[in-house]
Image 1 (cartoon, rainbow, N blue to C red):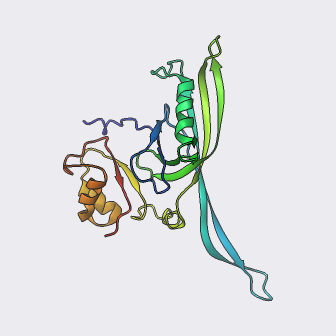
Image 2: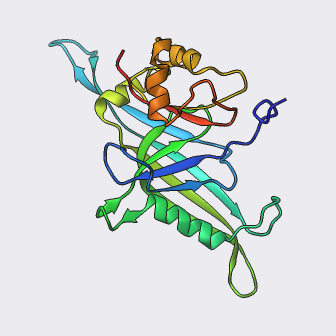
Image 3: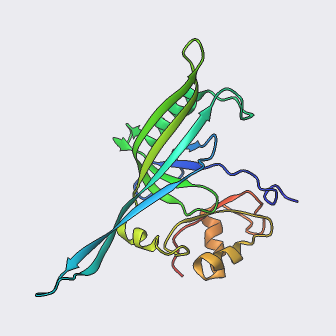
Length: 224
């Protein structure tokens, strides 16, 4: 039985980019210490209320989907009670570096948040708060909770496509399980198994037959 079949723990991942089109390799990344036990996705539709003369009701004409928000809470424990001892302050600074202001581009980084088979979300940090819960006698923090809110950074076309779970207009992240085949996955996502070579090229995979359980593969927007 493979590690994937036994339920290997996948950590939530935040990737930082310096370009608005998210091109190239990530500049940095943050991996959660303990996965959030709750993820809140909020979104809002915008309508025009069209009311006919002499009527009391109105017809709601859809205009667009507004940028949505993603709320996450990260728990950090430096006591070793979770089986791994970490430097809490160092982990917090890592989060701030990845999600915060980047002097090289004079703005916060462009982010991708992904976890398991969830659709990759393109976003930017909207707000964050850090609550320190436990300290050593010398003041070094041992436990902390980061509460972060991210706002959607997709264009309007992508936001509309997000209403469709398997839309090929979105970038998907899949964690490979035992028995997965790249052409089959391409057929599920794009409706065309022949796109496997382009997906392999996008991920730097030389042999599409040699994809192993636990690998993360991105399925970018592709035209048939």
